[in-house]
Image (tube, rainbow, N blue to C red; front, side, top):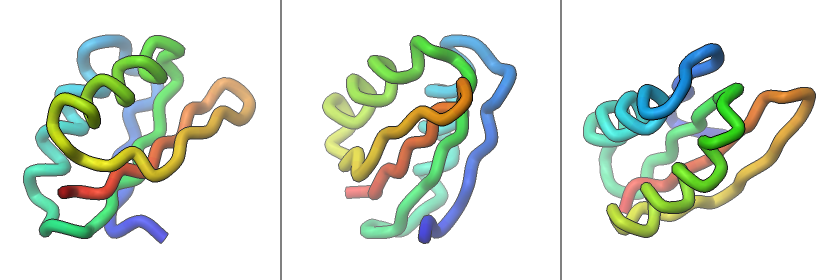
Length: 74
């Protein structure tokens, strides 16, 4: 289970990434952030965000138009 959940449903690029960046700063190394989004572009954005920041994308899933990501702070 994630340490914190961030709901960005209804927001479009770049807001989900900006809010994710801010939320992950408040976590300790090893803690996880669950991000919920309805923006289809968030799939590539989250992958790129994790790759560029060194954080680990633990999971990525889509259910009924809602994308769920679990990111571990590195």
